[in-house]
Amino acid sequence: MASVLQGFEEVKLAKPVGKIVMTVTGDVVRFNKATAEVLGFPAYVKVLINEKTRQIAVVPTTAKADNAVKFSKPEGRQTTSVSVRENAPLAAIGAFFTLPEAPEGEVAYQQVTGAFYPDDKAAVFDASTAVAGTMKRRGRKKAA
Figure 1 (tube, rainbow, N blue to C red):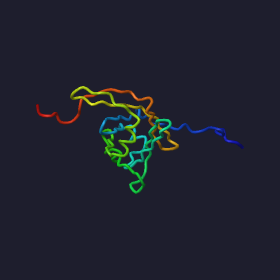
Figure 2: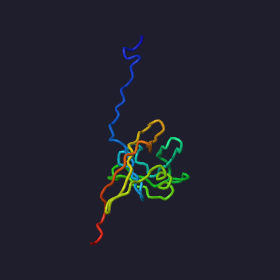
Figure 3: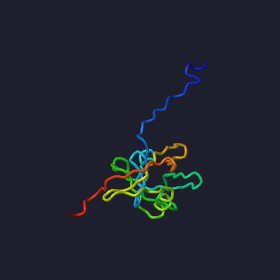
Figure 4: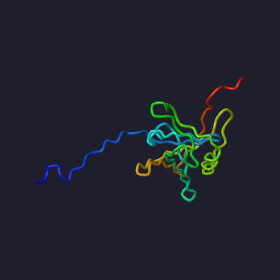
């Protein structure tokens, strides 16, 4: 005899995560904490680029993998955004963006909202959707 539940599927609970965002400045590529979260807080990632579509993908990897880039602290320890300062990914990603001139004391940036693809465990950012802006410099103020 068939179960009354035959043909039903369990509703999967997806924990909402905020928007995943990549911010590019002249000397750093920053991924917000939500990006680290959807990727599972990986210690290392690979940065992939598609020059034809002007897209950047970030996928988790291991420390031993070729081209592994140090990324996140473990879950619970990663309290802020993740900054990538390595020259190769910076140059490759930076090639997709033209940073506007920034006024004195400010930093120009380009910001892209990404999409997460769970089947590929990939965060993908489309450079053509970037929004430009400037922000105040962070960190210590230079002595006047």
